[in-house]
Image 1 (cartoon, rainbow, N blue to C red):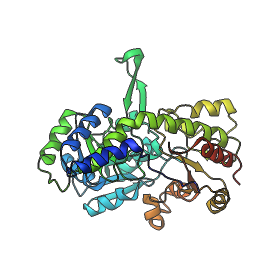
Image 2 (cartoon, rainbow, N blue to C red):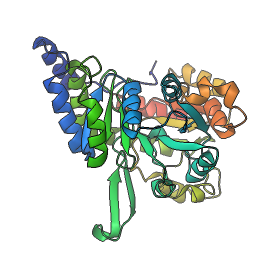
Image 3 (cartoon, rainbow, N blue to C red):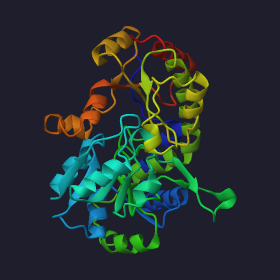
Length: 377
């Protein structure tokens, strides 16, 4: 059976962990600092701290922002469930937003409505590695905390007359006041658990540093985890290239089926409303849209047009395991409560399936999965 998920851990990653164990320096120390140096270089942020959980990262981001607990924090209904539970545990009021059915993301229009309903801050999850319409989100003039756990490495291009050729390219994680990079098992980068909290700019880093300078070692990410995360970050470009090659194979195979994929275009969400894989667009146009893989490929989600259980049973007969893409999302956790306000998210939760996509897959396994994608019921 080909498993749905598998962390990309090779001998090189394990060697780093074993060396750390042999040196008997597994608590937060030198490797924590070395990892953070690589993080700052990779993401071009001003400062960062590696912590034991994404919950802690969110806690310190909110502290640095001095965000009032009487104000509402907006989150996506397709964000991981820890967004909701952590905010509630920290004593904040949560406003859960619906999503665009073509991208799985909150749009400027949805967030604008959330602001009208009292939202004062946006915890922005970049679901499935797809980037939102940042420019129109920024003009809403509300504080944003980015969660790039699935989009680390994604690049957003936009017009800027001061940039070379009039186009500026900026990595995910540099649009919010603070950025959370979860390092849990199914995230695009993993340390076996933990997170990084980044401050893209100096002003925000100086605010955050007041708190991080006093953090107990109990809250910092241990060196044994940092060793794995450090090598994972160094190997990210190679692993991402493999994931994108597999994605393209899967995408082409899925065109002959009756199911849809999420849109990964840089078009604004207003334009995306008119784009669908069920539209009369030619195959070449569909291919052109999906060739834009400046977004990170963290998985291969398919939006099903037939019951999930039927597709799962068919895949299992072919020895391929699939899972619900949003089985650990906010909408999954609070389905009954959010059914009427997050209709599109609920629909995606019920009919979106993840197929195996990770660098350790063999050529024969990729070919087998691609064949199944084109023949799904």
